Image 1 (spheres, rainbow, N blue to C red):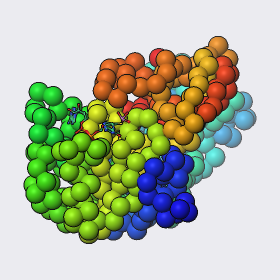
Image 2 (cartoon, helix red, strand yellow):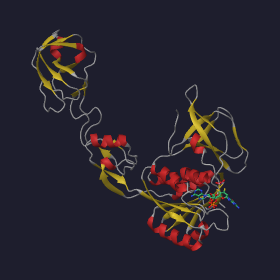
Image 3 (cartoon, rainbow, N blue to C red):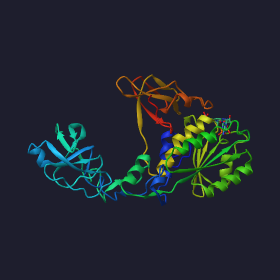
Image 4 (cartoon, rainbow, N blue to C red):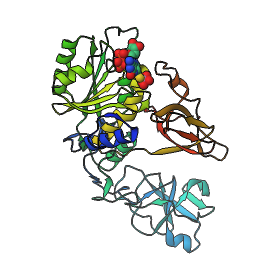
Length: 402
Ligand SMILES: Nc1nc2c(c(=O)[nH]1)N[C@H]1C(S)=C(S)[C@@H](COP(=O)(O)OP(=O)(O)OC[C@H]3O[C@@H](n4cnc5c(N)ncnc54)[C@H](O)[C@@H]3O)O[C@H]1N2
Ligand code: MOO
């Protein structure tokens, strides 16, 4: 079978390639208030609606003088007024006089100079200049960005910083991509609230992903007809569905038979990897389905590795290709399977990003997440010596270098 038509037992490399080919971009957009846009993705470039700063203004609290006076050696001035940050259209003092000025207050367009209060002495209404700083502490109009110029490019995730930029630049609203509707459907007759880790862990992780709106559904028992009905329902209502459990070879693993019954397209069936080998990727009525294995580590890993990738592809967000220096040697003896091992990042004595790993994951033990922050990708039949570079895939929750 050629790489592009194969669906079964793909290598990790082939699976990623296939996933990238399958995901479509071009999500519709909507206008929302800038203040509520955190976690969304810009669908078009944003231009500044005003210069930042809007006017020349003082970077310090101090006094405003005519530059000429200082150049002519004048050091004693009469204080004749004050310019506050909220004042518009400030005027310069006359020769021999000065004005008090506050940080952020507009300075007039004339040749003026601000001297910080620390370099002056005030007695009554007389201001003595003790010293003149080398640099005139004035922030120039438009030095941040200019009105009409693009200050945020499309396909950018909006974080709290970008909300600040939007507000500052006079953009009260912005055009963002509509959120991807992500449904999480846990399955398994044995799964009750006391043991269901997949549901809360997956929804918690996905909440940290930009551009996603999550809906969770009650646990679905291992009943073929019920599985068929639910998969059909979900295919009409969500953009992406993640099921967990019921996808390997057990007598009650009904997910794949149900998808086949419904005529779904099977895009990937099994990936040559550990953990998460049985992962299956299908499409029904335009909805993408990731059938994640039930084992808690496998479900989580597959979501981080594959579902996150699809979501980022759909939103046209870049992928992070991160490598770190191996702090210990590691080996993948298997000839076919890629192994993903948990790893802890740290900075070595030369400040290089390094990774330490105790080796392969156990698919049922969630405690590995406590002590690690990346997955290491170990290719089949490959040995990594201490000091080699290894690809790392960070957990959604971020990297902790402390
Ligand atoms: N004969 C074979 N058996 C298995 C194979 C195989 O190739 N041949 N693959 C194994 C691998 S690898 C994995 S991974 C699991 C995945 O199986 P399923 O997706 O069918 O998952 P289940 O059997 O439903 O559950 C597996 C395990 O995980 C627990 N589980 C399920 N859901 C949850 C949940 N929401 N929260 C916490 N724990 C959950 C479940 O109770 C089982 O212990 O199959 C192997 N078997
Ligand atoms: O691959 Mo399974 O995910 O080993 O437990």
